[in-house]
Length: 158
Length: 110
Image (tube, rainbow over all chains, first blue to last red; front, side, top):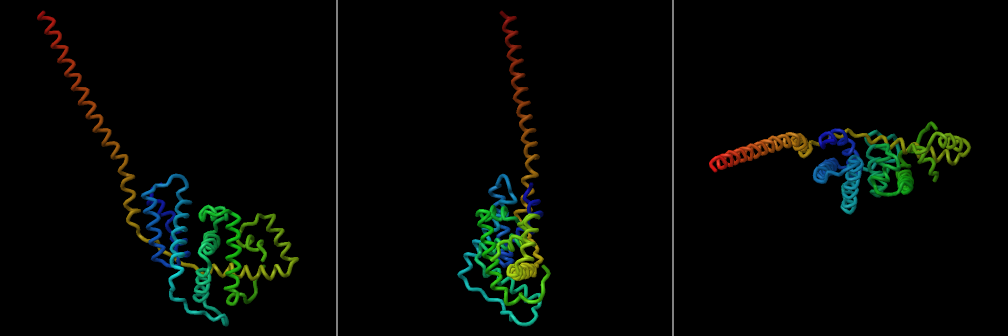
């Protein structure tokens, strides 16, 4: 498949993965550009789509790891009490995901927003399937602790 | 922590395990309350929806060019190759026939 078609077909998905991990549009765009430049120079054989996903995730994770030390402006704190607006809820979710260790953040994003199986995630992140599961369990535990004050109200259907 | 809850929410259980999980859920109140917490949080993650436009990447648009050029390039090389082959063949034919004429001439003279 030619690069242009690959970009049309998978660019959106790759951009979404990168954006959710980095939480920065400009960084995601840059990573996408770098990935396709690398694809153009290397021309990998075999599973190109899996290769693209792996490169995008790894580049995004590296960027997030590098930026962990740099302090960024925090989102305005939302109060746990009262009804939360959709915008506030979104900020809380984004912040909770950002506070996760990068690998846990990536697993949650690939699982929740891209519906990938643990096998796919393991392949992308170069970990075992059981390890991918454990990372997700840990991430969910952390998220639960962080989001509990905001969202654990009202009824839910089982 | 009930790992099965996460497996259920993330769609990792098959139908048989789902049935078993639901049955367990009905019988275990502690598990049920834990499930409610995780389910609510799992659903809330969906709040983050974004419409992200992909950027124009120059290299992607340039990429089609060499791929389309390849057959045309091969065709031109083939035409040039055939031309050179024809020229050399014709040349060697001419020189061979000249040589034969010369040989015949020498033979008659003798």
